[in-house]
Image 1 (cartoon, protein in one colour):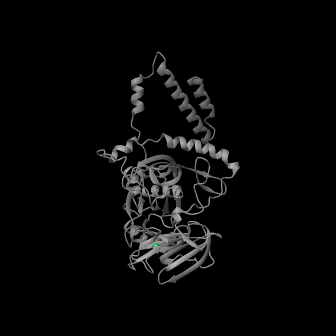
Image 2 (tube, protein in one colour):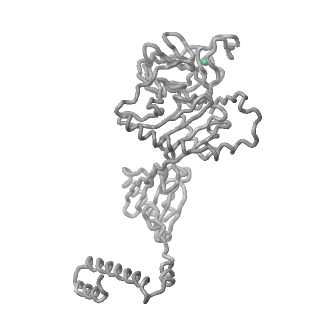
Length: 456
Ligand SMILES: [Zn+2]
């Protein structure tokens, strides 16, 4: 290391050089100086004592508050939310921006952000160097995912997307009353329950969940600045009911993203279990059913799913629309031909989905109409009818055709993903959950028939 004299000598010879070099040298000198201090701390003749040094280090350095890329400490900051029927001009006039400037700003920024698009209840921030003068920046947050900086002097608008980070989280629950309750009681969201239903919909009949069914999840949580903003993908799910346990492992290739069981068999089936989500079965396929409207025994060739009017009705499989019509009994209905064997029919719709006509090709999960109570119906529901070789059958009892298998070339990569996700799922325990709701053991609970919980 150079001595102090040498450093000064070097410094002197370089004095005439450019400012740039000068600053580099000062920085270098600072490093050399600091090194000397640090070295001396451990040597016998200390320049300053350790205690003194720590005191120096502990000297409070004010941390600047940085938000939206501004050091807020250098501004007068006002925050509020957009009020009903409030326009940008109303806000900026209060902050001493002349109307002519506001008008110019609105025109100049029209293409990057139309100021008429401000929405009530969204937050905004005003930055002014001096509140007696016109404000300098107006920052608007159209969503948690982005903000728009209006530079009030230069009349520009810049939209900044906030970086979204994804963390992998785990969750588990034991069903006591409903899946929703099991989720929310354990700190998980409705959104997560819906995603879990998507992952497992082909294997678990969510209309037949029972008390003490249990689930575990490995999922992505999306967050901005440490605040959760939503659910990403479900990477793995485990579900155990009285009969079976199920694993669903998410796997993607170039063509397809989906869920597979531990043997790499697709969880997805050629047919969805139900044509509506979050519904309850209000009437089953029954050849001796007492009809609630006709008030006499009449076979029921379908399965009724009760759901609020307007709930989307999905095609349960890919197919071709062969009927889109209305009759006195069926109300508005759609019939789809899936192949030479299977057809499905959806009754009592309040309305059809736009673009669904006779001859339309529909995909599995595509909305074909909306729940209603047209025709012979005593409440909003969809009567779902399943035709096999021209006869109506109970789809819940059908052994439906399997989907296409995973390509053999993907299996080695799947096995790696599977091992990792399964291990994570298996590590999740129920110990924090199992005792939460049960206040006293129920005698003979194991022998008693499990309570059926119809709806979510
Ligand atoms: Zn029905």
